Length: 255
Ligand code: PGA
Image 1: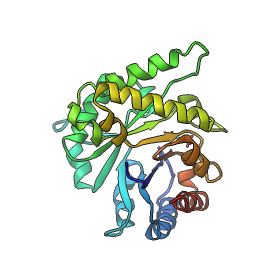
Image 2: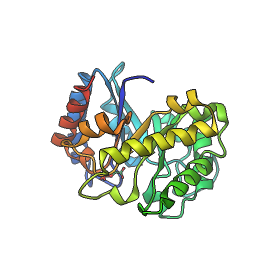
Image 3: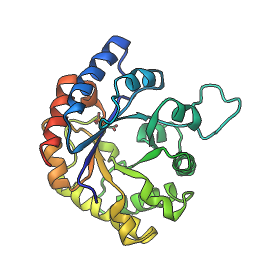
């Protein structure tokens, strides 16, 4: 497993203006130039893709991501954005199955189809999984197992190592505090076991596993060190130029 950490900024439906977007891009660009052990991905709303792309320098460690892809690859589908359009826009990574999309009706079947579409078009999918609540009976473990296996059901076993998996407990997204690092560590191990049962041990350890949910510049380093994750998926803090730059530098200092 490579030591390089993956930091993905998920801008969701923000910021509200091009000016604000430009500010975040320019500060991320400055920090990205000096990152040694961090791969930075920014996933803006579709209409800001080209703006972010302009901030990406050749041979740098800064990449463009999308927040979703259409299940359709071509045709008349108002409001949808196909994988070819994303590819042509310079997108290298695509978040798939974020809980906010799942809550709008995206099920494991659709998620799996989208994983297949991105992998076959050489865009790295970032599969989001996570339980809605942690019950004392451990039902969340069955939930996670089912969510992961159904989400991966349409992709070829040999392609499992081409994905990134983001573990985001739904209750920690948008919350004040992230999950405890010890719980993250245990869950990551459990996810690797699920992946290993679906493929093999080697593949299970090739898949980068990220954590997401209430990550900020103060807790990022600890989550990576003690949570045993390969990176982070970040919402709110990725829109704060000062906080996000500090977070990137902190994580980079781990290498
Ligand atoms: P948050 O969101 O960092 O604002 O909690 C995380 C996410 O939804 O990916």
